[in-house]
Amino acid sequence: MKKKILVTGGTGYIGSHTSVELIEEGFDVVIIDNLYNSEAGVVDKIQNITGVKPVLEVFDLCDKGKVDTFFNKHTDISAVIHFAAYKAVGESVNKPLDYYRNNLMSLVNLLDAMQHNGIHDFVFSSSCTVYGQPDKLPVTEDAPLQPATSPYGNTKQVGETIIRDTTVSDKNVKAISLRYFNPIGAHPSSLIGEFPKGVPENLVPFITQTAYGLRDELKIFGNDYDTPDGSCIRDYLHVVDLAKAHVVAVKRLIEGRNLKNYEVFNLGTGNGVSVLDAIKSFERVSGIKIKYRIVGRRPGDIEKIWADPSFANKELGWKTLSSLDEAMKTAWDWEKKIREKKKDA
Ligand code: WQD
Image (cartoon, rainbow, N blue to C red; front, top):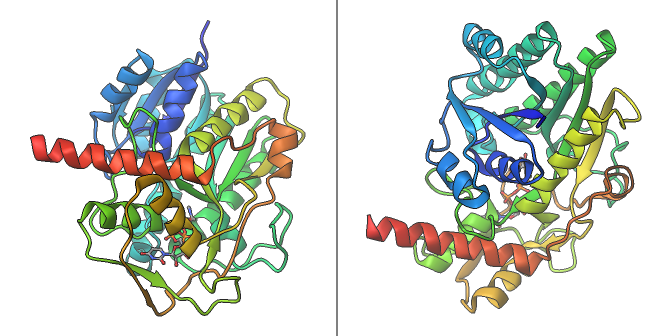
């Protein structure tokens, strides 16, 4: 019998890639999504890639009644991977209550319903933002957490705390928080990827939109940091590599191979890449020169951070397989594909 995994936010960027990997690994997938930041048609794309169309239930996890109704209907769920959340750092500063309500109420409703329905295995979408600017690099999971610099980041910190407390109070509950570094790129089929709403906040969609001619120029936020070329350093990983980590994490829980009831893993490549190096990588794979301008620092930016992924390498048997150039190439292929489609429409 195939095990069924509930993927919340499964039509979103990382959720859709993870749904593909789960199906390809022989799991059944049921998705809950409110389509706030994604489209229902994503399940058809997942079907195009895998041959299987996941079940999609469209509702908001903040609606406790609907969450309970869902679990009454789907009684055979083995584990939950929870992506559904708002994720725009800048927006969260202007709408903190929306972020706290949406990201935390949904989490509480979900954990509550899981407990009531005897579902114990939970994988959470966390973020390297919980570290702030670490004293030591690369950063390991036991590094002290810094006060969050945005309401969004705070929802990830508080979310991790809620989950950890739940595993302490109920020894049946097993959970893994996955702290993502900077996911980029798209599925090699170019059938799924990220649709940023409005002007992209993140670097790679801004680069690809500039290359496509949708933006006049890329603004580089600061070249006076204490880094080799003065621009900020991040750890960019291919979204398909990131998606695969969720499959190994959920299997670890289902098969009871976890060391503790609550575990945390960094998911990154272990390589720090500057903004200027990321642009060079894009230029190499696309053959397009990016028009850019150095402007002032972006408030809240961390100077440099990259992962020590050795705990995930050892314990999950997971590591990133794609290079930065390969990931950039898929980001560019995806950008061209979605723009071509818009032209045809
Ligand atoms: C990367 C670098 C910018 C845009 C994101 C999420 C965060 C977490 C990690 C999930 C920075 C620079 C960017 C631009 C630029 N993920 N930049 N010009 O800030 O590392 O964080 O990923 O939870 O929550 O927000 O990613 O892609 O915005 O920036 O120079 O137009 O690119 O200053 O150095 P960030 P990013």
